[in-house]
Amino acid sequence: MSGRRPVRRSHSSARGTTLIELLVTLAVLAIGFVALLSAFAQTEVAVGSTADDAQLVSRARAVADFIQSESFTYAPCASPSMYEVTLDQSWLYGAKPQLWTKSDVIATVAQATGGTHTVAGVPNLPLAPIAGGTCGRSVFDYGVQQITFTLRSQSGHTLTRVVYKRWN
Image: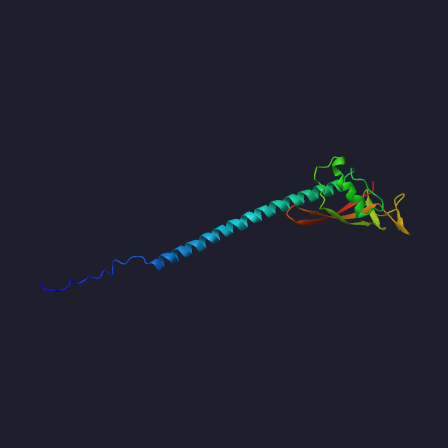
């Protein structure tokens, strides 16, 4: 017997996966998974925000309808605080509960100071001051108010609307 070592054959065609290739593959999969979770989270946030905005618009429509209704009494020469008290107690007048919340405000109440209107198809009839509608020196209430109110949702979104209230 000779002292020769057996020759090793190389198996270059039977190459396996290296540890680095496996780690790179796992990193790519992890990045893809995180991106997928982020997309789901953004969709969930958008759906919640849209639902909140829809409820806010619905509540604004209800408040505007209530202000324009007969149940909401017109106050000559009114200030925002005068109408906020009425809206705080809106449940007394048959309005939906939680129509007006403590975070909602009436921003402005602007009085009509003259002008004309249309009645029964006859345009440009002059507005006359309403009885008892003296708001101060030479300022009269002509029976139309522009009321601007702002509603706030629980998530902090705000919505501002303008509504006109006529004296009846």
